Image (cartoon, rainbow, N blue to C red; front, side):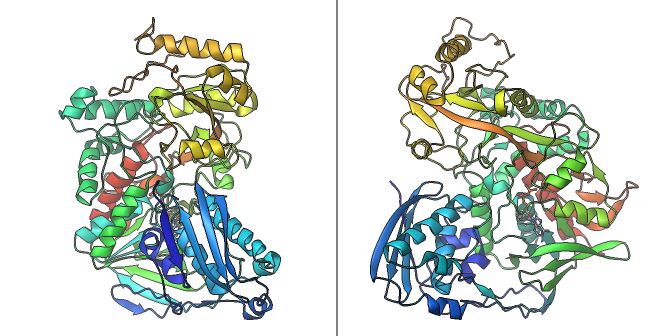
Length: 640
Ligand code: ADP
C-alpha cells in the first residue's frame, strides 16, 4: 500500500500561498520564515507582507501541560490516516501524518494544517474548503494525541492565528484571469504559452475550484480514429447528443466549438504531460462512451500539469486568498479588477491585454439559484435542504460582477442536479459509480425507477419521486473485483465500506438485508435487469425504462451477478449551472444589446448557452479547456 510520510516542523504560509499542488511536494523543515509576498510582472506596488503568528498569551497559557513523548491516533479523512504528534513538556514539537489522501485536494491539507498547528501551538484553525473530510480528520487526530499527552484541547482550540493586516497593492500585467479553476487555469496557461505575463486571482487557498472535485472525465472524440470507430462515435454524434440533450436550447455555434475542439484540447493536455486511460468511459448522464478518463483521480490531473507548467515557466502566477470584487471599466473597456486580500486590503490588478472571467457557477449559492428558478417548475424548491456538489468558494461572484458592467445573462434557470450526492454533504465523495454501464439505482422499496444511462435531469427528477428522495446505487464485482480499487474520487471502496458509507456483501440477499430493502423485490429487480445484459435472454432489447446501455465495450458488463456486491445511498444534489454570462465564439462577453464589451472574456461555468437545459456528463471539463483556451488566446491578443 502506498503511504506518504510527511515531516513537519513549522511554517504554513508558504504552503498555503503556493496552493495545493506545490504544497503537496514541499517538505518544509525551516523553523522561521512566515513572509508571504506576491510579485507580479510590472508590479508597481507590491508591498504585501503577511505575518501569521500565535496568539502569544493564550499559547503561553497552554505551555507546560504535556507528558513528553510521541503519541499516535488513527483517523479517517478520505481514507484512513495515522497522525503522530511529538510533545515536549511545553510544546508540540512535531507532527507526522501517514496518509493516502487525494493529491491536490486532501494531501496538501496534511501538510498545511500540521504546519499551522506547530506554528501557532494551537488548534483554532479553519478547515480547508473542498477538503473538509481531510481537515477534520487531521484536527481529530491531533486532538486525540493532545488528549493522550494530557493537554487541554479546549485551551488549544482557543489559540487562533493572528493575522497582521497586509498593505494595499496595485499591479499591472498583460492578462488577468479571475478564478484558478478549470477554465481559468486553461486560459492562463494558454495566454502564457503565447508569451504573455499572466496574473490569476483566486479566492481560495488552492487552485481547482469545482473542477478538481469532479470525476475527471472529458468528453472528446477524434473523427475517424480507431477509438471513434470502435465506439461508433463521431464529432457529429457528440454535437447531436449535446444539442438534443439540452433540449436544443444551447447556442449551436458554441456547441460546435465545444465538440470540434474537444480532441485538440486532449492533445494540448497531453502535451502538458497529462495522461489518460486507453479506454473511454460512459459518465453518468454522458449518453455515450466518449469520456476520456485521466489517470489521476478526480480533476487533479489537470492541476498537476498546470502547476508543473507554472514551476517551469516564468510570468504566470496565481495570487491566492484574494477575492475579485469588481471590474474596472475605462472608456467602455474592461481593464482590470479590484480585489480584496485576505486581511481586507485592496489589491488592484490592471491588464495591458484582456481580462478573463472564470469564477465558475452559482449552484452553491442558495439565494441565487432560488432567484434563477422563480416562475419555473422543473425542479422542486432548491432551498438549503437540497445540498450541492460545489465547493463553498464558488458562489456566482463573477456573474454579479459581469452584470454590473452591463453583461447579458442567459438561461439562468437551467440548473443541473445529479442523483449522486452524498446523503450527508451532497458532495460526490463516496459515489461508487464508475461507468454508467455497470450500475443500477434502486429505491427504498428495492425497485428501479429510471434509465440509469439516461439524462441527468430525467434521473434526478425520477429520484425526487422516490421515498425520502433517496436511492441506492448497486453494482457487482465488474466494478470492484476485490475492494482495493479506487472509485472516481480517489477513495478505496473498502474504506468507504469500513466507514459505513457503502455496503459490501457476498450475496444479493445479504446486501438487501444490509440496506434494508425488501429482499424479494430486490432480487426480482436484479433478475429482470440481468435479462437485458450480455448473456441474458433479452440481450440487446431496451428495458422497461428505455435503458439500452448494458455494456461498456471493452469489458462486456454481464449484469449484477458476481460477488462481491456493493451498494451506496445517494440523494439529489445541485451540481452545475448552465446559465450565465453570454459570450460569442471568441468568448467575448456580450452586453444586453448584444454588443461586445471590449477587453472582457469569460469561460467555463460562469458562462451560459453552451449546454442548454441539461448538460451531458463529461462535457463540463471539455468546456473549461476548450473555451478557457480560447479566452486565454483572445485576451493575450487583445490590444486597446
Ligand atoms: P470552471 O469549471 O468554470 O473553471 P471552477 O469551479 O473549476 O469553474 O473554478 C472557479 C474558480 O473561481 C474557483 O477556484 C473559485 O475559488 C474561484 N473564484 C470564485 N469566485 C471568485 C472571486 N470572486 N475571486 C477570485 N476567485 C474566485
